[in-house]
Image (cartoon, rainbow, N blue to C red; front, side, top):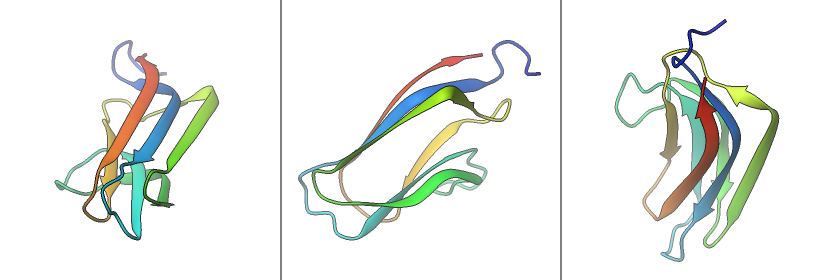
Length: 90
Protein backbone atom coordinates (compact mmCIF):
# COMPACT_ATOMS: atom_id res chain seq x y z
CA UNK A 1 0.00 0.00 0.00
CA UNK A 2 1.19 3.51 -0.87
CA UNK A 3 1.60 6.28 1.66
CA UNK A 4 -1.10 8.91 1.16
CA UNK A 5 0.19 11.53 -1.27
CA UNK A 6 3.04 9.42 -2.65
CA UNK A 7 1.40 8.12 -5.82
CA UNK A 8 -0.74 8.98 -8.81
CA UNK A 9 -3.89 7.19 -9.99
CA UNK A 10 -4.80 7.90 -13.63
CA UNK A 11 -8.45 7.56 -14.63
CA UNK A 12 -7.96 8.66 -18.22
CA UNK A 13 -5.64 10.34 -20.64
CA UNK A 14 -5.69 11.62 -24.20
CA UNK A 15 -2.72 12.16 -26.50
CA UNK A 16 -3.22 14.52 -29.46
CA UNK A 17 -1.03 15.46 -32.39
CA UNK A 18 -1.25 19.02 -33.70
CA UNK A 19 -1.64 20.32 -37.24
CA UNK A 20 2.07 21.06 -37.58
CA UNK A 21 3.62 18.53 -39.93
CA UNK A 22 4.73 15.64 -37.77
CA UNK A 23 5.62 12.49 -39.60
CA UNK A 24 6.08 9.01 -38.23
CA UNK A 25 6.49 9.91 -34.57
CA UNK A 26 5.60 7.68 -31.69
CA UNK A 27 4.51 8.62 -28.19
CA UNK A 28 5.34 6.65 -25.06
CA UNK A 29 3.57 7.18 -21.74
CA UNK A 30 5.44 5.90 -18.73
CA UNK A 31 6.65 6.55 -15.22
CA UNK A 32 9.93 7.98 -14.00
CA UNK A 33 12.59 9.97 -15.88
CA UNK A 34 16.05 9.23 -14.48
CA UNK A 35 17.70 10.35 -17.74
CA UNK A 36 16.21 13.53 -19.26
CA UNK A 37 14.27 12.77 -22.44
CA UNK A 38 13.64 9.12 -21.65
CA UNK A 39 11.02 7.04 -19.89
CA UNK A 40 12.21 4.68 -17.13
CA UNK A 41 9.27 2.27 -17.46
CA UNK A 42 6.88 2.35 -20.42
CA UNK A 43 3.20 1.88 -19.48
CA UNK A 44 1.68 2.59 -22.92
CA UNK A 45 3.49 2.54 -26.22
CA UNK A 46 5.31 3.45 -28.18
CA UNK A 47 2.12 4.34 -30.10
CA UNK A 48 2.22 5.89 -33.59
CA UNK A 49 0.63 9.35 -33.73
CA UNK A 50 -0.53 11.08 -36.93
CA UNK A 51 -1.22 14.75 -37.69
CA UNK A 52 -4.47 15.91 -36.01
CA UNK A 53 -5.02 12.51 -34.37
CA UNK A 54 -6.28 12.05 -30.80
CA UNK A 55 -5.97 8.79 -28.90
CA UNK A 56 -8.01 8.54 -25.67
CA UNK A 57 -7.65 5.93 -22.93
CA UNK A 58 -9.87 5.31 -19.91
CA UNK A 59 -8.82 3.11 -17.00
CA UNK A 60 -11.32 1.40 -14.72
CA UNK A 61 -9.94 0.79 -12.15
CA UNK A 62 -7.48 3.70 -12.43
CA UNK A 63 -3.91 2.92 -13.48
CA UNK A 64 -1.66 3.49 -10.45
CA UNK A 65 1.92 4.64 -10.86
CA UNK A 66 4.68 3.32 -8.63
CA UNK A 67 4.99 5.36 -5.42
CA UNK A 68 7.09 8.52 -5.82
CA UNK A 69 7.31 8.19 -9.63
CA UNK A 70 6.24 10.90 -12.07
CA UNK A 71 4.07 10.49 -15.15
CA UNK A 72 6.20 10.99 -18.27
CA UNK A 73 5.27 11.46 -21.93
CA UNK A 74 8.00 11.10 -24.55
CA UNK A 75 7.74 11.70 -28.31
CA UNK A 76 10.22 10.21 -30.78
CA UNK A 77 10.40 13.36 -32.93
CA UNK A 78 9.54 17.02 -33.31
CA UNK A 79 5.96 18.32 -33.49
CA UNK A 80 3.06 19.49 -31.39
CA UNK A 81 1.94 16.80 -28.98
CA UNK A 82 -0.59 17.44 -26.21
CA UNK A 83 -1.28 15.11 -23.30
CA UNK A 84 -4.41 15.59 -21.17
CA UNK A 85 -4.59 13.57 -17.95
CA UNK A 86 -7.41 12.98 -15.46
CA UNK A 87 -6.61 11.44 -12.11
CA UNK A 88 -5.72 12.08 -8.52
CA UNK A 89 -2.93 11.94 -5.97
CA UNK A 90 -3.41 8.88 -3.77
